[in-house]
Image (tube, rainbow, N blue to C red):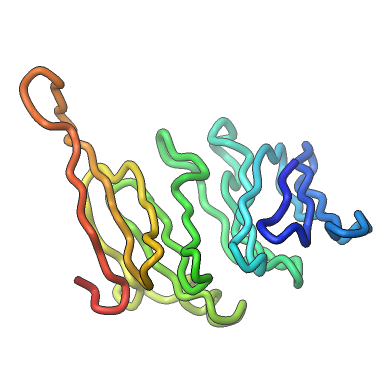
Amino acid sequence: MVFSPRGSYLAICTNEGVHLYVGNSLKYKGLLRQAGSIDAKFSYDERFVITSNGNLRKNRENFIIWAVEEEIKIKSYRAQRGQNMEAFEFSQDNENLAICLGHEVTFYKLTTVEDLRKQIRAPEEEQHIIKANFVQKIAWLKSKNDIIVMCYEPDYNPMSAAATKIFLYNCETKV
């Protein structure tokens, strides 16, 4: 059970999907279908939600991005090794979504539902992707368009070397 950041929605995860309720009245809004849903994560402005059934169901849609008001599935992802909901981060200014997919982080502008769909469907060379080996965590800073990306070394040995590389990236300047 998860409330949206402003309390406008309540999401209840079930075997058939995520049931949405209007937060102040608990009036039923609808069902976001996903087999075995276990978690939900709303954008700060509550326009989008990401649902997850964990990475135990390898042949299914493990993560799904939805438009909340429209109850439209925008994109689904199959879980990669060790991936969880932390791989999907909304910026606090509601302008960006970053998705960590193993050796890359993909950024999307959160303008309209249709625009987000176009960005996701665009060829890879037109998408905003940064390549980084063994990305483990991403976190938006409160400053506009800045994100921290943390990577682990693949052959990490705590007795001989530092384990982590951290870098700051600005989505607007692409630096």
